[in-house]
Length: 250
Image 1 (tube, helix red, strand yellow):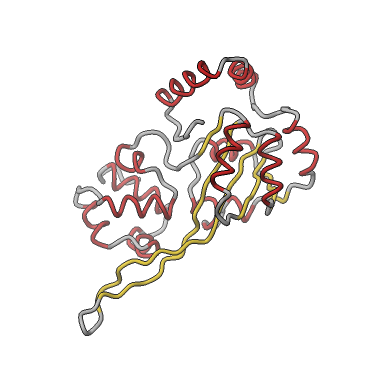
Image 2: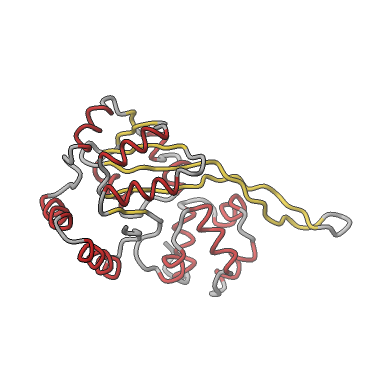
């Protein structure tokens, strides 16, 4: 990143991920004036922030303040809450991919989406619009077990894909946005390997095996599951207040 730019401009350059800034902005429907304002040290309008969140799955608090990690992730502390979240999300038409490093799994929901943006005026002075196609994304990770597997299977799993452990951590920690997942030359999902033993993986996860990746995570998860509902809610509040990771803990 260019250190001479404002923090907001640096974060926009990060989102552009090597693409020319103005070209990237045009491709996603962000007004040229928005980029110019940021380069002059000004902020983004509410409409521009909402648009970036929608098309890039970026967190607005990260864009504005640099707090946490860049991209939105739904992290669930137990299988039941993950299943409830999936029930809500799967009311829409998604493509459901299961991502795994053979130790844990995440669910990436995506669907093609379209938004119209202003595109100047015609000769008669009437407003013109153009269509921006993008991919809407939701990521669900955490303690995913038998209920989530059953719900995802009933809905219809598009692919089960294997990635490395380092990439899996990047996904879980909100380091991978829509572009990094689907569109970049080294995008995770198009370049991932189809997992050959999905049934065996699901059996392990359904039995609660290998859900947590370290002994510390397993100990924490075991303690959490033995708490009363009131204490579990208190733990969720504490973790949400302390975490630098952009996860919506449930």
